Length: 606
Image (cartoon, rainbow, N blue to C red; front, side, top):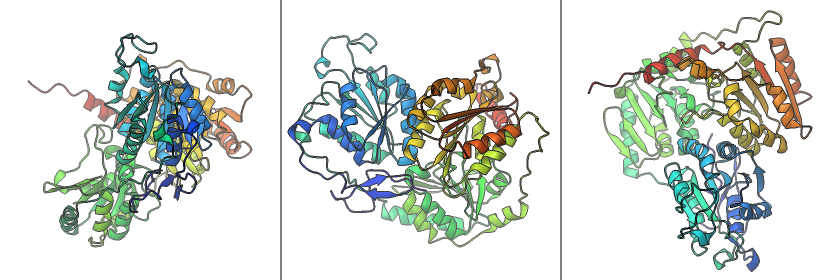
């Protein structure tokens, strides 16, 4: 399921008449709604130009925290009728919200103030960079007259050098623009935004606080919509890569396909499914690609995650004599502590612009989408691996039936969450045991799914849930969050209420950082217990629609879900689930021991 960026239509020739507006499931032209016309002199300002640019590329919500350096800029964003400014409780959550928004819309934006805001949002921007998300991070900067002087400003570390924030952002953004004069402001802003869209990475734009409201001739017309040139494959390289791959796979007895997380940035999910349809190969996904490939596909065999894979999936993948990985990331987490039983000589690795065939040749400047589409026409149909999977497959058992009023078990809880899923829902899984429990959910057609595996920042899900729900209000978001992670970013449940969102949050209260317990236990993994439902009631404070419940057993959970999906379906529903501190998925136990072993490797001999 490709998400198309709001500013691009890379299937058409370059033209000022074409621009696409990102939505959750489709792309629409917005040229007619934002014509390029002359504007009055008093409106020909930097602030208005930036606001119109954001609206053009499909951003309708901007997540912000006000500070004295960005207040004038915020006035101009508010004045744009197609933008909604969403005030967040802190900059970290504003960044996480822009991350979640970008996952659904294809691009997101946040606005913070200089240094104290910029360094606070930095962690979220780093996460978006790791996940290849186009995110426009806008910072209100110092007055343009203060640059190049020896003045010391507030919100800094007390030095007259204002580049500290910029230098921090240089490693986690693909472009940085410091706008402190109007002569090149137009060019800098447009270059930054277009670079974010082309590279699918965050960018940093700092705008001096005295510039947003000053008219300038370069802003005298509405911005002409972007129409960015499509990337092209090297045709000879593409043909050679397809020829070599087809020869390799057509000789295999039981080849398989495995989708990776870079299918998103390559916009190649549909092409990957097309290849699966044509080849008949068994089809799996890496854990961080869950949601990128339809799980209702007839040859889908589950999640390949080494020792903690979906039942029977690892056996089929690792016993194959050839496997094609499309867009993989092999890190210590996805490889379960580097314990995957894969062999390089059997693997074809397809990255967004490169193909590597086993121990043989590599082909650069070959786009994944083009390669997969061309390969689909060259492969012989071979369903041997899927047939083998079908023969050995044994349906998963159900959790043991709970005794009346028995303390709730996690596996029972997720059995009931599974029944809640439909094409009108989306799942957000927080870092922790929810990674493993949510991996086992079977996603119906159209059901969204997001989690942050590469960066793995605890607390990400609260802000991401806010942003995702704001981006696709037609879906009801179901967020599964552990108590330890929730304590990091809990405040922005307040913003969800202000925005009228009807998310369902399952707060899994097991008394600590369970994922870290299984890697390396210690007293630091135990946290202070909160009255979580009481906290949400205090945040609610009678404003907005909110309903909370605390459940201890299956009967109470069933009743709470019935209420949340029935009479309280228009409310933000917060269900605190009390479970035993040692109640984890079996996958976390296995994964934790292997990651612990990888972390504890002794130094190599010198």
